Image 1: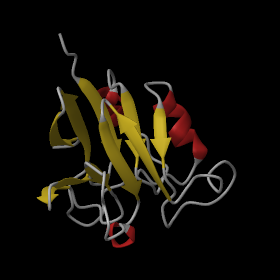
Image 2 (image 1 turned 180 degrees about the vertical axis):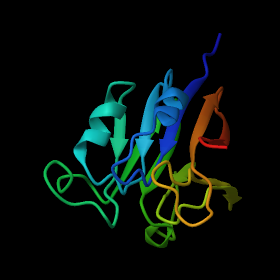
Image 3 (image 1 turned 45 degrees about the horizontal axis):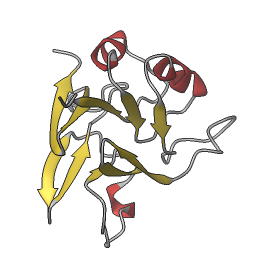
Image 4 (image 1 turned 135 degrees about the vertical axis):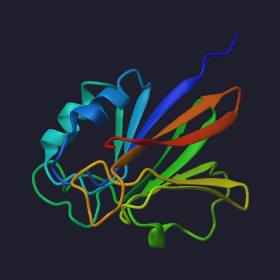
Length: 154
């Protein structure tokens, strides 16, 4: 019997930890933050919910943030995930990568490119222009991937 793994995808919090985001991420097996955290207190709040993988964004600097990588790769449930803040920094060669998680644009996106699932969970932080406030959930079950965008505000 296989158990599904749930990976919370969040980005561009810009110092804001919304209660709606915490509620949506509760119960996840792991959380991935794709940068623009700004203050480490954001990471502390998320780390209380699940193990955390984080990359640094273009607005990130300071104590505990400077030591974060600009990109990282993790494998969860047999699925390899590459995480970087800006999609412009995704390498051309993605051999062995199943999922790419990015942020930066604040625009939620789920699309397949050459067999790789690209997910931008959008921004869970302060609303920017008329863009939605969202995060993403990635479910891994029996090697199958399903991603969805979760709106945090009406």
